[in-house]
Length: 84
Image 1 (tube, rainbow, N blue to C red):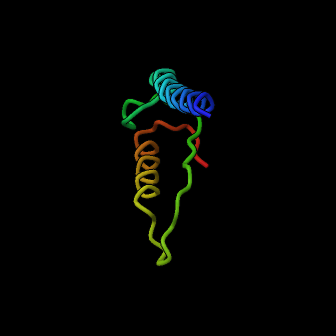
Image 2: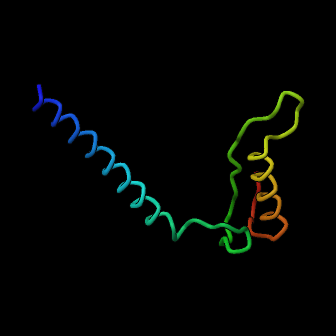
Image 3: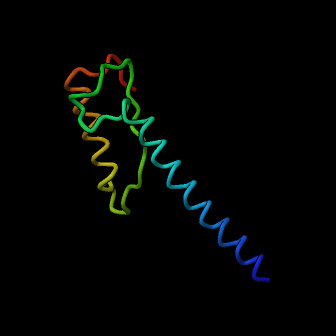
């Protein structure tokens, strides 16, 4: 029983270490293509705005409003050649 518990603890610790390592690896790979400002983003042919929730009263959620604002800024800064 004690051996089984040791194996279980080892597996849990292994999964946690793997998940943390994977997170750092993904962040490192995505860093060159991740932009925090519309102005630093490269020009593109099209832009896609990912959806988020709309409140019951019809207002956009804060996340969706930020996405729409960023898309509008990209369009106004002529970062997009075409918009859908």
